[in-house]
Image (cartoon, rainbow, N blue to C red; front, side, top):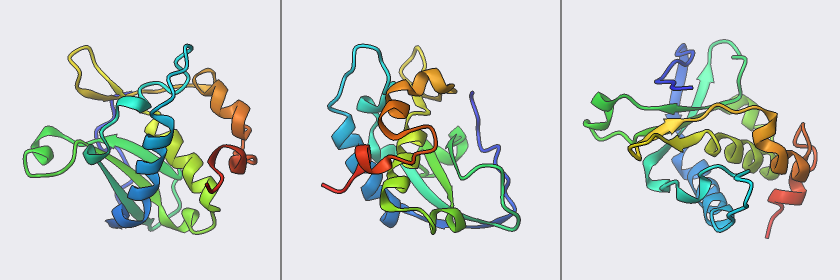
Length: 151
């Protein structure tokens, strides 16, 4: 799933780095220490937080997704952009509990992987890839408190 900014672009964007960045960084710090033998958490332990932008999206019409991880094109990276972005639909996140926000961000971080040369790539996955996550929080994230509760 090599997606380079194939996102509905009609709407407004603003940085979510201050709000979502610390949450994602804490997830990487907490779950990056885990290394399950079955690889359920993919490569989350090796993601460099400094390479991810977090963006609020205020669309003109509600898209069929609530968050999306995208790989930024090389020409934008050479202009100073980070190589990855997590774009989140602001109006939907406004209704989430803190645990739901963590669960969605964790899901998006699980889309980040590496190619054979060690470059970032986007990873598609199905429910099998999320068996530990689903076991912990449920298919609809209804038990997000269990895994992502406040510490």
